[in-house]
Image 1: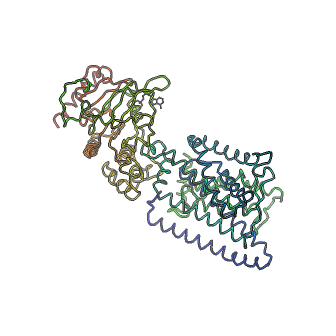
Image 2: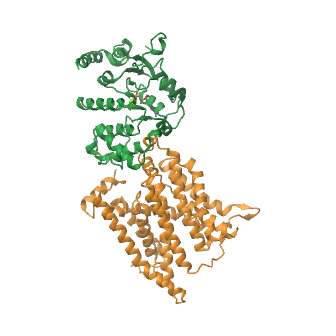
Image 3: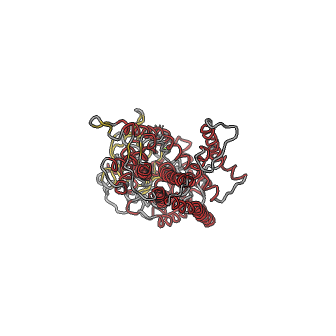
Amino acid sequence: MIATLDSNRRWRRAFLIVGGIIAAYALLAPLTSLDAAVSANVPLLADRLWFRIATYIAMFIVMATGWNIIGGITGYAAFGNVAFFGIGAYTTGMLIAKAKWPFLAALPFAPVVAALFAALVGLPLLRLRGHYFAVASLGVGVAVGELVQNIDYGGQPLFGGASGLFLPIDSIANRGLFFFYLMVAAAAISIAVTWWVLRSRFGYGLIAIRENEEAAAVLGVNTTAYKVAAFALAAALTGLAGGIFSQWNVFINQDNAFPIEYNVQMILMALLGGTGTVFGPAAGAILLQLLIQFLGGTLPISFDLPFVSETARPIVAQIILGLLLVGVVIFVPRGVIDFFGGRSRLSLSYLRRSLRETSL
Amino acid sequence: MNESSSPHRPLQADLPLAGEVKPQLELLGVTKRFGGVAAVDGVNLRVGKGEILGIIGPNGAGKTTLLNCISGVFRLDGGDIRWEGASIAGMAPHRVARLGIGRTFQIVRPFGSMTARENAAIGALFGSSDARKGPKEAFEIADQVLELVGLKAKAGRPVAALTIPDRKRLEVARAVATRPHLLLLDEVMAGLNNVEIDEALDMVRTVHATGVTVLLIEHVMRVIVGICDRAIVLESGRVLAEGEPEVVLRDERVIQAYLGERYAKRLRASGDEDGTN
Ligand SMILES: Nc1ncnc2c1ncn2[C@@H]1O[C@H](COP(=O)(O)OP(=O)(O)O)[C@@H](O)[C@H]1O
Ligand SMILES: [Mg+2]
């Protein structure tokens, strides 16, 4: 599965990538010109909304791809990675709001602080295996959000407390476009990092840890250092997304910087697209985020669900989402990237093989 | 029995027995307990560079546990282990591996999602710190060791498509790919037929010929007699006997405690067979 793809599969993958880029361009190019229309004071609601959605998608690409490094490649199911998103957001937010730093000077500290924190908690946490690690990491994710909201210093909430942290509004021209491209750049970095990891000694060591940690150790893999490094790398990427988010959103609090549901969403995205692969988590992030927004009725191409009242809609949307994911995990366990990019297409034997593998 | 106890033995360069020569690996009163029961109980052992040492003993004697102690998988409850004169007790497994001590697992532990070739490449990517390779060279070494163990034709197969004997071969290939100075083999020939055992013996000889010290645990007496310079018998975590394989296997205590008279007769017969080869 690594480095020894046959040429046939390589070609299909290349077509998939090129096709994806063309599709993305076709989708985004008119939006770029629409943004110019906005700056010319032509009111276009759909334009702003689309940019917001596209930026959110890029943000989730970063988070899902980052999670993939620890959860997919190393095999440690981290359930608390939203902590790194929040730490990144608050690091940049504090430097801008309290220390009055410019945004681009404050941004690099988001991944650095998130990675340092991950290394610190990773040392004890990554000794745990399986469910124990998953539960413990979830605990850390929740605890950090609570701490940030409740730490006081000299009688004042240090990080803005329950009322959150307001950042000074930036004077960035075309800010919708600016943050969109910044988040897309972060997504590209996260994918490039994954590509590099999977071709390096580091990546081979991580996969060996996932497949059999004790065997990896006696072959000379420094398992503790590798796991901590993978966790820190995942945290750095997630923290970067958080740092960009803080200035993009101008206001951060516990709810939007540490949303518990992001923990699950980034994992589902990686599963949906294909864990352990370079492009899988990104593909999953695009699909799932679009689906979430579509079902939630926030897309401009909105629709009415039959027999469902407006108030029941979020619940029904969640149920549809859940059923869809169960189906995906059962029938496409290696993710949509494998489904479309692999040798096997939609066929009875593919479904049979998938069922056999998941029902072990 | 113990070579080091005979003080006037002349030093012979072509006899790689421990004793007067500085041992490569030295175990001093190594002890490992599980819930108060000593699985390995004060084992003393010296292994000379270039030696092939066999370890035999009944099931549960502590052979695998001893291997786990040497490779750093288990922490010792007592005693010391020295490699080239320096203590390695308490060292993490990956650091032991980097010193050049490679091992296999009796119950195989392949990297399931990888092909045979990728499994072997992991050994070459890591392993002995004096022989680490980048990904490209690591795959070349993987091809070499797969050929050595007879898995060349199945290099591209995923682990799931390999038979149990093939997985044992892969276990060896991965350990050899680390380019160890000392290779610890835990019952890698169990379950092989006679032809396959001969192939495996050739493989061990080939690795040994490159200057690798070999410590192997086997139940197959033909292997111990056919290839080992020296054998030790473990029983209840203690060294019961030690010496040349033929001599050890004829030791009264060994026959009584482990082999049983019927087994001993069979051994004599097979020993004569070996003698004619
Ligand atoms: N991880 C372990 N935990 C508890 N007991 C163990 C463990 N490993 C081995 N033992 C016990 O130690 C003794 C020696 O086992 P082992 O070294 O596997 O024997 P051998 O390899 O000679 O068959 C056995 O009684 C076994 O039950
Ligand atoms: Mg054993």
